[in-house]
Length: 114
Length: 116
Image (tube, rainbow over all chains, first blue to last red; front, side, top):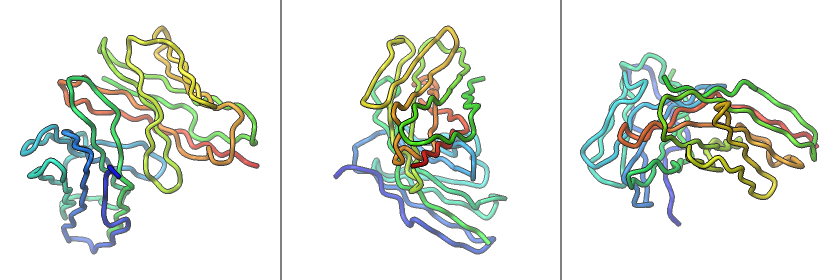
């Protein structure tokens, strides 16, 4: 079955540690996205990538970094510089064909930093 | 600036009632797309519908229907004969143009609770 995989579902870290969240898709989609969701709020875009080896900052990129070395993978690193890292992180992907198509989302990773 | 407003934070209905979720958007683009997503308690967003700005026809899919009105910049979602399984948070989203990354701008979401 095609889809987006995010692991782990729950992640706990100590303050000051960097942590990497994985996102893998087998939908052959070109574009991938990372969103952050805080309780009772909508999704905010962290980073996105429309092509391998290229990515762009979203609205809240500070304290985060990404890489896109392979089409199917778009890992997100939450660095110690991110002041409030505890949140629900969602990865998404979409096909690219000159128009905007729907994004498909992974199951998310709940990160707790104490 | 582009913006999506879902003024209803929470809605509670009894099973079999009809319910409408409101979505109002702001954009200066002439070509754009609107979306609705469902987020059940598990957390994963489920795609419901995509509508482009040139197609104002209403759409019906089973118990779900959508009313797109450019004149009022609204894209409302109605669930007919609601069921307990419809309980979730629903998000309306607006796309930026493709050549700007095709990013989605989400509203704050409406939490729908359907009671038996």
